[in-house]
Amino acid sequence: MLKSFFVTTLPQTCLVGLALGLSFFTTAQAQVTEKSVRETVASAIVAQPAAAQRELILSLKLKPSAEAVEWFGKWKEGAIFLLDDAAGVKTPVILTGAAAADDSFATLRVSDGTPLLGADGAAVRINPKEVEFAETDSGIRRAMKEVTDVVALADPDISKRLRAIQDAAVGQKVEKLPALQLLKTTEKNPLALRALEESIAIIQLRSPLVAERIGACQKLGDLGSLAALGTIKTILAETESAKDRPLVLAAEKAISAIGSHISRINAAGTAFRGISLASVLLVVAIGLAITFGLMGIINMAHGELIAVGAYTTYVIQNIFASGLNLSPFGMSISIPGMHLSAGGMDLYFVVALPASFLAAALVGLVLERTVIQFLYRRPLESLLATWGISLVLQQLFRLIFGANNVQVSSPSWLSGNWTVNDVVFGWNRVFVIGFAALIIVVTWLVLNKTSLGLLIRAVMQNRNMAACMGVRTERVNMMTFAFGCGLAGLAGAFLSQIGNVGPSLGQNYIVDAFMTVVVGGVGNILGTVISAFGIGMADQSLQQYLGNPVIGKILVLGAIILFLQWRPAGIFVTRSRSLD
Image (cartoon, rainbow, N blue to C red):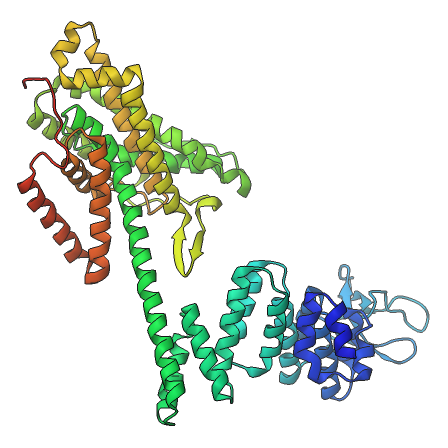
């Protein structure tokens, strides 16, 4: 009757506690549960013998709460003291208030929080160094741990509850099964339900019943449990000597199923990393597809324009935080910060994105007006000039920001990840994939649906004819180059969320960017997209299956060379009316 009453009337947290503690309680213990948590803890502290203390502590599993964990912590830390009250009864107390001149503190009863009074009715003050504190032993601490585990299983925070469910399988202790099985009947969260099934099955691998162990193997195989793989292999090794064929077959089948699940995880992870790398390459190469593909300028400083965007993100982050001190050319420059809280700091990247675009576009504008405008139709000279500019910009970065890499922290909304069927998807890389798609759409709209895009296409296809029609080709050149450089700045902002920012950041991507543009077809945006995804997927797949990143990159480069031997103009050939 007692068990039926609790199962039908107590909430989920009580059900968990009941399942773990049912074997410990008598009628007297059930009366103890009517006390408050602190009253029960106070009774346990002064109870004798130690078995009675453990019994009272374990009674708290009927009503698991964070308050019990808090009191256990004070008990274990020696923050609870034992004093005789006015009636001569040993009473557990805690200290309160500030220390007096004689290092004494006022005291409060653990049981109800009221001040402890002496025989004269005055509040009792004690020096903690001169009085006895409540001690614990290993048995008491184990009982506390049991209650703490129950509290964790009933935690309303799903992340903490999941962690507690997974930890319950550690050690494969059969006495934890009732609580997990009872929690399974009331749990609604699908992630927690899966974790419960997994933990229950892992514990059942140590069941004395062979049928239950076979069922556990089948369940873990169906779940593709990575956590259980080592345990099942151990069970298999132990069972083979016992010649228990059905269990051996079940264990082998479970290992095979988990192995297949691991293969699927690796394949999905490789695909995601390939798409992620392709998105990074695409963001890096899309600006180059405009400056090199449409304008014919071999801009070797494109990598440094990426670094401009990354360093702009770094500066914006510090402005939102505590400021930044720079020492360029021996001068000391202090940029004040806004000292925003964590919530405000999360907005820095929203500001950094347009700022990175504008900063890189401005640098590109200056570069075009001072150098590039004199080098149109002179590819070799533009290559040499921009290579020299890239060296100058790298040295400027070192003089302004230092030779060492700087750290750009991701906002909280880009710092976590999603785990879907054991495949981890980082939020920062998902964001790059989404934003790369957005950049492609915006670039296509600008080039095909705006008057600026019409002028860009006209000038790039036949510069002289466009000039004869009244198009101000110099202004179009300037705006086109600035737009391509601004896209490189956006790429730098994205790359700052994936790794550290340094003077040579862009050099790590410039070769891959040129390969992406050339393979896709010079000046063709769609070809750049296809090329980026092809190179990214091939690179990650080869690295995964060969197990050697260097060999993987060499094979990708070799494949690109062979492809260009077959199609020198790339995937898509850009047709023009221009005779040159």
